[in-house]
Length: 298
Image (cartoon, rainbow, N blue to C red):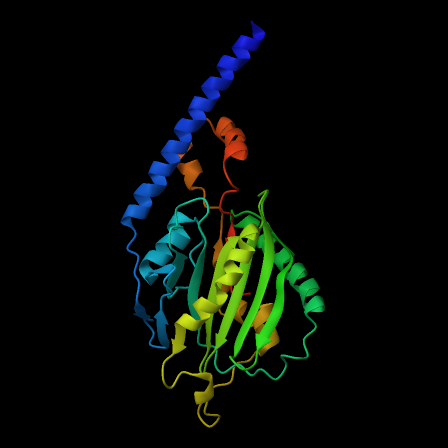
């Protein structure tokens, strides 16, 4: 009799969980139906250049990107973006979603003289200490703590293309799945284009294979290219390549405010339906939910 009762209870929980999955999907589908994805060539609003959206991606304009980052993904208000590049079929509301967030920092011309002299192992130790302190402030402001686990991809600077790459593995709160924060900086005459891929750590290979198509899609406009630098009239940035990776200069101008949290769409859709059952069932049936996302340029 006891076994029968347990079986009935399991069926009840299963039906409830399946219902919650349906509700979550409907909730996400409804959000996706309202997004206005674009393709083709996009002229970025500040005139620094254009983006030829790769065929496997779509683009969300700055207004929609702000909605996704702040309202949908639950972030504190931060600096504005130039939009988002989203893989086709992933959307922004689903459990396996990830995206490149586009911003621009008009910090000036970044000298790359120090590119071959940086001790990135030592920098990692310093970054961990800095982030530990920042995490304390984050918690005081009502957000989850976060921790830098290490490099997911060690910093690399392509001198010919004037492009800097690096990736961090970050843990937010008690999340079982760590966050991947893949950073790209394209150096220009008067500043730096920021392409920041935000995903879970298990999507690292998927992000990596799309780096070149994304980089090839962007082109600075005439007068804004790195080679257009005029030392007589142009401002030189206060920080060099090492400063970009450390994030000091970008933190100074306030871009550190964009810290993406858990995408809790499923939780929003089923909050009244019994969270404990859902949490148990999702661990058995669903891939890890899209994680907190750190889109800071640091």
